[in-house]
Length: 453
Image 1: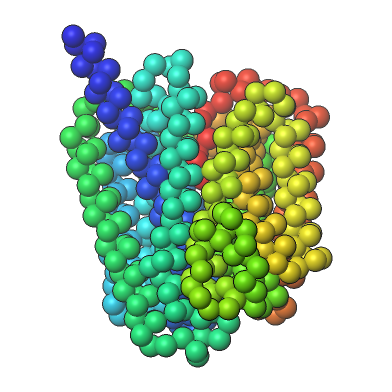
Image 2: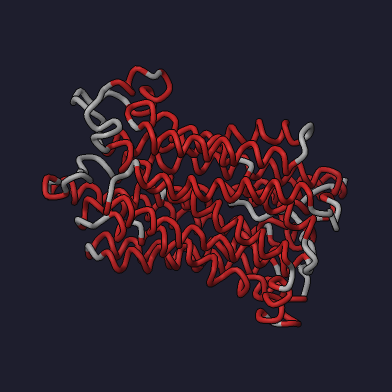
């Protein structure tokens, strides 16, 4: 009887942890409609609008190692509750930004919110693997990742509905004051409910704190004992830790740059802005809906971005099956090469078809993060903690590459800007081919679970 109750309690705790994966996927993917909305609300250039992505993803570079120190000292439940408090503070700053109409506050709010998410990811990933029988740890982490992808699929669609009605990104002067106020009200409403969701999750974790604490793995005290500088130096001494960090930097940068620019790109006159042809595609037309006005609006384009992230969700399921038959470096080489060719097609051809191709890039982004992570852990000469910390730190690619793409699109156009992610994917293909020839130092099953992006 005691074992049965313990099993039910562990299952309940795991389900609560899994909701965290959905929550941070949903919140992170809201960046796409936020970038589109702030451009129309505040009349920003593409570069300045992309500072929203910079403010969010720079938090990974700032907080990854401090979060590891916090986890090693405070343990799982206190760390998760601190992360919740930081996320609530970020949501409150977003509410203030919407009510005061201050873009600077938007940037601060996104940074604080992302800092909390970074701390949460560091604590929650090992929990998802540990809450249950060790034999099924990989299944549990994969199951939780699926909910993360579900969140990234729903977030852009809901954000487009709430933030982008009547917003004009090609000429912000034509955006009415009423549309601006509606968008700000949508931002206010979204982050108010997110704040409530986080508070509810905090209560769940307090209620299940004993079950979670008993099942949680003991975090290594290496980071706390050696210090952040020493651990990072350990990672930098390993050639493959550095190469893996560079690969994560390029992948996250390319994925985020495409996602945050996608609504601008689809809404542009060179792609779908002056065409109703995309409505003829069954899935795309159903997601966007026909507003009765010729051409695809910013709101419709924002809804279509959900398909970019939905492709990643489908790709993870297909990719998981393929990885059982194909070696990881080979599959990564194939996916990165295809993504590179797709970006090149967009750059070279343009038109309505280029919009469809751009949305499909998400399908091939799907396996890149976890495969790069595990390939690196298998080949690194640095400690597991140092390598994992450095790879999480390298997510700052999401802060660096999107503003660059925004600057180039502002100087040229959205189609031309696709050559930046094309270069990123080409370099990732080279990384995957090199990894196929490199010696494996650690077995894949001994590697720590990768942080879910």
